[in-house]
Length: 293
Image (tube, rainbow, N blue to C red; front, side, top):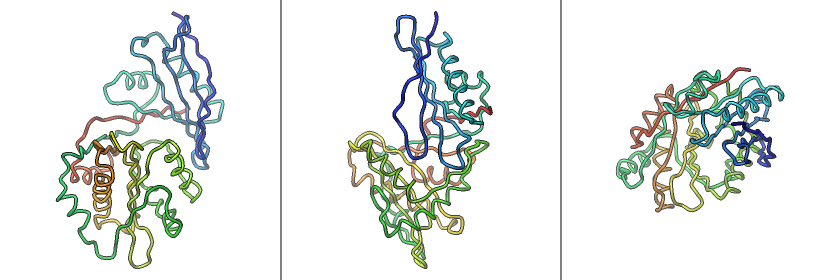
């Protein structure tokens, strides 16, 4: 059976990336699969593209996935990219497809979920309210308040040494415009961004932060984004305290949420230990795959 690949116009573009898209169809014009290629546009990541290929289970092994991947990789090369990354859950057909297409596994990620109905509220409250001399917690919804903006931008450097295995992610440079654009993108799709930050009482600067994105409906599962502490402030249990406070606030403000989702690199044992202590239960493992062009 022949497969037709059609390039589509994808209007989705953010301040940090743009996307290309392709549709695979059978001879009758019925869609059987799609591919999206995210091209990063910020300095430090212009070498990078991220690929997502999906083929209907009934249509697999008929070359649709291969043709979609070939179109996307060709586009990445044409755009001057040197690395394409993609993710697949361990043991799935997608993992086998990527490995068989020349991608190599470069990072293992453990996904976990905290069922809010089973959360240990007394233990979480103890973690959140346990005093840490020299620090206090603050929180906000949406874009960072103006009075904290500069120090919050500086605190993003806490992500610079985040364990990422052998993935060539490049360098992510944060400024206030990028922070505001990210918060705006979350709001525009109808979701709610909650941030909890630890502030050093000596100089009033942010020492660390944790982000949680809640569905606008207040139902289903919320997703943790970044959690990080600046190197000079580590060793005080701030990540656990901030994340515990975030869990408690989510439960109070959104009582119909089912759970909270997080993912952690397997070579980041500290954050995995924090998640275990707070009651997150592993659900599955995925791998980041990389193709060097």
